[in-house]
Amino acid sequence: MVTSRRPAASHAARAEIRLPWWAVALPVVAFGALLIMIMSPGQAQAATADPALGQLIERTLQLLSH
Image 1 (cartoon, helix red, strand yellow):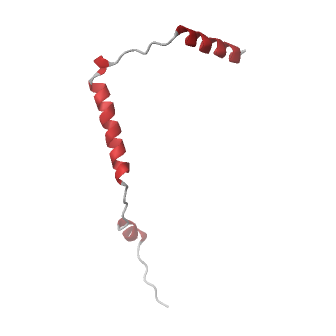
Image 2 (cartoon, helix red, strand yellow):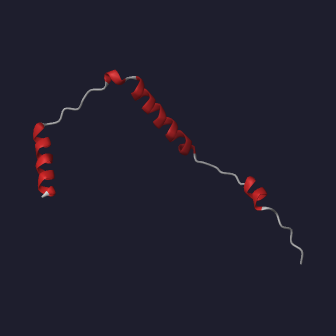
Image 3 (cartoon, helix red, strand yellow):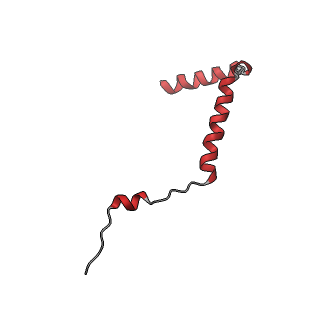
C-alpha cells in the first residue's frame, strides 16, 4: 500500500480563513470613535456626582474594611 505524504506546511498554507463582516467592521468603528474622542477633548465635561452618593460609597468601603 503506497500513500503519498504531503508536508503539513503545504496543507496549512492553503487553509483559508474567512471572517464575518462584523469582525472587521467593529474594530474599525471602535478605532474611529476613540480617534474622534481624542481629537476633540475640549468638549468633554467632568461628571458631577451627588455628594451623598460619594459619602455612601465611602461608608460602605469603611464597613467592609473592618
